[in-house]
Length: 172
Length: 420
Ligand code: SF4
Image (tube, rainbow over all chains, first blue to last red; front, side, top):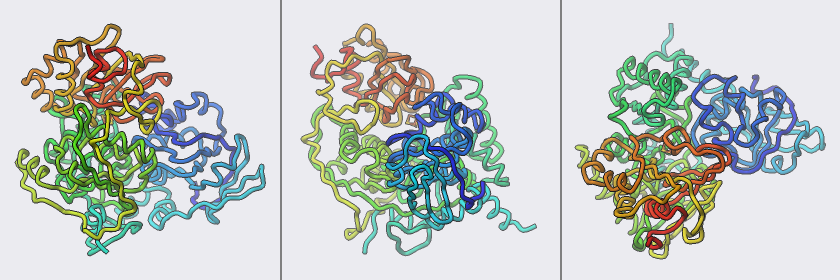
C-alpha cells in the first residue's frame, strides 16, 4: 500500500467499543498467517463478514475501536480480510499503534463515524487529511498523524522502519 | 512545573531533564516481556526486520502462561518457537512450564522489574506492574520486536489522572471492587492514552497484591499505565525477593494532572460488572439470583494467594451448588505451592472445585474451562466482552473472589452474607 495515494471502498458500519475479542476471537489466534486470520475477521460481531466484504472496503465505527487485548493479530486479520481502512471516532491505544505498525490505514474522525451509512462509497485522501463520502457528497477532515507516526506510515510500517534503522547502524 | 510519576520516569529514560504530557520521546526500556501467545509473531517480525541479536538478552523476559501446558499442536509449536528463541538469544529470564505463572503475577513475584524502570510487554495487562512504581505498558508484537532490536521505544507522554483513595474497606470488599467502581465511573475509554496514578491513605495501607489488582484493570479504561509510587510496602516486597530498592520516585507536589478524583472506600460495597463491558458495574446485590453455570477464580487480576485464601475461607465447610462448576487457577507455581501447603487447595477441592495448574486458561477462553452456548459464568477476571471466555452467546459477570466463592456455593450470584 502506498501511504499517500487516495483509495476508496464501501462502508461496513459498526458501533462503539468494538474490542479485539470481537475483531478476532482467541480461538482463531494461534497463527500468524494473515489469510487465515482474515477468514475470521470480525467473527465476534458478524461471522460472515470476511466472506462478504470486497477488497478495499472500509470499516466505519464509533468510539474506542480495538479496545481490549494487545493482540496484534486484530489489525492483521482486518488486512487479511481485505479491509482497506478503518475510520472510527476514536481508537484503543494499543490497537492504534498496532495498526500503524502493520500498515493498516486508520483515520480518527468522530464526524465521519456518525455520518456514514452501511454501503456508502467513501474515499480516503490521506495527503489532504480528508475522507470523502461519495454517496452523500460530504467530506470530513481527520486528525493528522503525529510526527513519529507519520514516519512509520511513510516507511510502510514499523518493520520497514526498523529495518532501515538497523541497516544504517551496521554499514557494509 | 513539576512532573507526574509517568512524566518523571519517561523523561529519565530519554535523558531529558523534564517532559510534559503530549511530548514524543524515544525512551530506553529496561525490561521487555512476551508470552507464548505473542512471542512467536514477534520472532517472525524480528527476523523480517533483519535483526539477528536482541539488543540486550538480560532485558528480555519470556513467559509460558496463556496455553499452559500446551492445549493442542499449534500452541505446542508456539511454545517451542519461544523456547528456541530464548536459547538462541541467550535469554535467561525464560520461564518454562512448571516453573512459570501468569506473566503479570510472575514479574512482581520474581522482582523482575523495579521502581522507576520501564517495562513493555506484549500483553495489554502489562500495566499491572505499575503497582511497583514503574512505568509498565502493553504493546503489540511488532512494537515488541522493535524493542528487542533497538532497546528503545517511542512514547507519547500521557496525561495523568490522579486518584486519591481514603477510608477502610468493609469486609469482603477489596481493591477489585475499587477498580471496578472506577471503571464503571470513568467508562471503558475514560482514561484512553492516559496514565492513572493512585495515592492516598487507603492505597498506602494496601498490600502489594491488592495494588497489583488495582493497576491491572486500568487498561479496562483504556489507560496506558496504572501506577502506585514505590513506598515502604513496595520496598518490603522487593526485600522478600532479594532485591534492594529505595522508596520513590515520587510525583512532584506541583505536578500537573488532567484530573483528580477522590474515592472513599468505606462506602463501597462488592461490585459486579455485567456483560458485555467491564464498565457495566453496579453493586453486587443488584444481581442477586442470576443463575450461573460456572465460577472461575484466577487470572492476573485475582489469582494471588490471598484471593484463593479468601475464596477458600468462604467455601470452607460448604460445597459448590449442584449444576455449577467451580474452576480455580492459582496465578503462579509459587502461589500454587503455598496454597497446597497452607490447606487452601484442600479446602477448595473438598468444596468441589476443579483446581488447575497455573495458566491464563479460562480467562481468555483458551482452555481449562471454556464456556459453551448460552452458558453464564461469574469470574474474578477483568474482561467480559462478548465471547471472551467461549461461545459468543455465553455471558460473563466480573466480581471479587469472595463474591465468586459465595456464588459458587449458592448457584446464583450472591454475597457471602447470603450463605446459609
Ligand atoms: S490472565 Fe487473562 S487477562 Fe491476564 S494475561 Fe492471562 S489472558 Fe490476559
